[in-house]
Length: 190
Image (cartoon, rainbow, N blue to C red; front, side, top):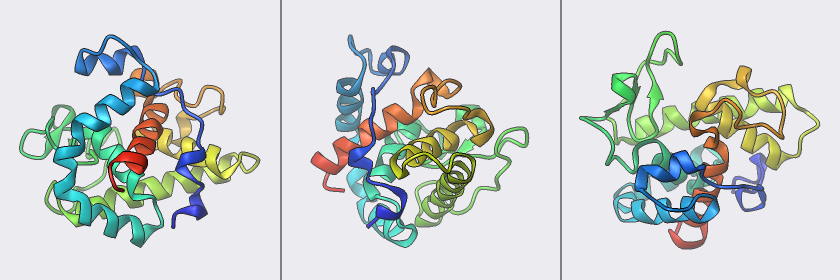
């Protein structure tokens, strides 16, 4: 499963920035911080497990990656207010951008529904495809990481692999998500 988009376990990552690690008042950053935050969310993540696995199978996206985006975006729902985050600009576990000057999406389904996870995963797959077209010389794993960064900031903000997170939230979006996904794959049962 999910090999068509590359193997999340083979994507190189530096993990969370100090800025992201500060959300949990961690005194360290990097892969260890990403793993700690993923572990913090794993209990809440279990209630979405079957939906995540179903959606991952439907789109060929590793369920561990979906779980990692849910962890990063909404802390498995813990950071949301009635399903909303980002000051009312984003919806659901995977924070679909509904701001007309941002993603401009129309929210589909309840914030924690399979329908929402499908919509957000479709957006992720769309951006992986955009990065594949933009950087055909990148490996599948590099394109996957670029697609994750584009999920956060759009493919127009991705200019090179060496600075894939240059304009992403916290300067670490894809690196943090990849590290969390690797933790969920190894420890979270995804």
